[in-house]
Image 1 (cartoon, rainbow, N blue to C red):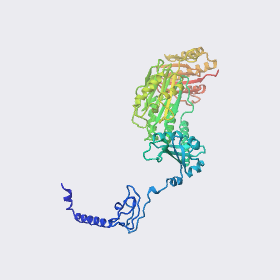
Image 2 (cartoon, helix red, strand yellow):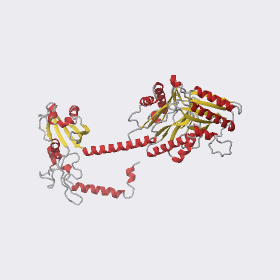
Image 3 (cartoon, rainbow, N blue to C red):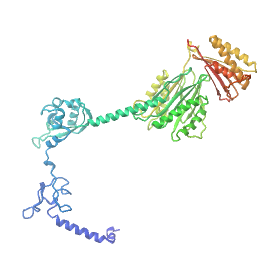
Image 4 (cartoon, one colour):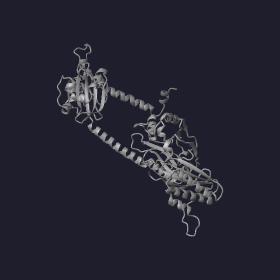
Length: 592
C-alpha cells in the first residue's frame, strides 16, 4: 500500500507540506553565503564571485565535526542578535592549562623518565624539581608512592594506568593516573625512538575522601563488633559439661556487615546423667533475628526443665515461635543423650541431620523424622534415636557450614561427612578442623554454629569412677527390704563414705516405697555413679508424676518426696517413652 499517497488525503496534510516548502526556500535565501558550511577553510568567510567577502560580518569559527552547528560561527538568534564565536582548542596553551590545574601534574620522557615539566601545584606540594633529571632522583616522591614500576609499564604498553589511594609520607593521599604521550619528532619520517615517548603523571589529592572512607570503615567495624558482641552475649558464655560427654561448640559470624545472625546452640543438663543438646537457626539477619533467637533459646531452656521427649519440646517451641513472630522462620534440632541407654534421642524442625561417627570411623546420618520449621503450626513432630556409644562423636551444625551458592546442600553435608570421618582429637580440635575443611574463613558470608560431642572410652582408673547397677523390683511389699539390701551392698562396694552410703540407702528406700504405693509394675531400681555424683532412680509403669507437698501432722503418707528433696542435691521426675515414669535424685560426691 502506498502510504504517501494515502497520507496526502488526511486533513491538513497539504497545508503542512506547503508550509515546509516555503520555510525551506526562505532559509536558503537568508543563509546564502552566510552558513558556516559555505565559508572558506580555517574559519575565513567564503569569497563572493567578485573576490570580496560574501558576508562582511562573518568571523572565524572553530574547526571540528560541530562546525556549522547551532551556537558556532555567526548567525542570527531568535531576536536577531549575533552569536559570539567559540575559540579553537588549538589556540589554547597546554602549559597554561596544566599550570592552572589544582591537581599535581608532571611530565617525564625517555626510558629514564627524565623530568620535562612540573606544574605549580606539583611544586607547591613537593617543591621545585630540576628539569632533565631522572625521576628516581628528581621525583623521589614517586618512588615512595610506588609509581616508578607503573611508569615503566605505561611507557612499555602505551596504555594509561591508574593507582588509587596512594599515601605519601606527608600523610596526603593521591589517586594517580599515568597517561602515555608522544613528543614531536625532529622530522616527520624519523624512526620511533624511546626519547620521543613520555608519561603525563596526574596526581589528584583525595585525602579528604580517604579520611572520610576510613572513618566510615572504622564506624562499620565498631558497629560490627557491637553486633557480634550482642550475638555472642545471647549464646552460652560457658558450655555445661556433663559427666558422660565431652562437648565443644563454636560460632563464626558471617560476612563483614554489621547485621547479626540468628544461629544459636545450648547444652542443658537434665539430671540423672541425661543431657539436652540444641542447635538452631533463625533465618535472616539483623537485630530482629537475634531477638527471636534469644527468646527461642530461653524458651528451650525452660521447656527442657520439664524433661519432655524431644518432639514434645519442639511442639511447644512451634507454638511459641508463631506467637513471637509469625513471619520469622526458624529451624531447630533438639536431642537428649541418656548414658544408660547409649542413645541420642532427637527431633528436628526443618534442621539439617545430626552426624555420628562410630568408634570404627563409620559416619552415620540421622534419618527422619524431620518436621517443618518452627512457627508453621499444625504439624505433629516425632522423635527418633541414633546410637551414641563409647568412642562415638556427634556433630550438630547450622546450614552456614554446608550451604554454598550454586551447589546442592546434600553435597555440603556429604563433604562434612568426609571431613568428620578423618577428624581426630578433642571436640574443640574437631570443631576447628571441620570449619577449615568446609572452607569457613574470615570472608565466609554466612553465620556458622557447630557443636561437637564425644562419648569417651573409660579405661583404667577412670573407668573405676563410672559404674551402673540395677535391680528389678518383683513381688509386693517384700521388694522394699530387698531394695535396701541391694543398695547397701552396691554402695559399699563402690567404696563410698559411710554417711553417703546411708543417704543413698535412705533415698532408695523412699523412692521404692513411693513406687510400690503409687506405681504399677514393671518397677526397677537403678544406681549409677560418675566421677562427680551418685544417682538413684526408680522407674515404674504408671505415668502419674509425683509432686512435693506439705504433709499434715496426722498424715501417714506424703513425706517421701520431701525427705528426698531435703537430703539430695537435686531430684526430679519424667515420663518414660513406654508410658511409665522415672523418679530420681542425685548426691554430689565429696571433693578429694
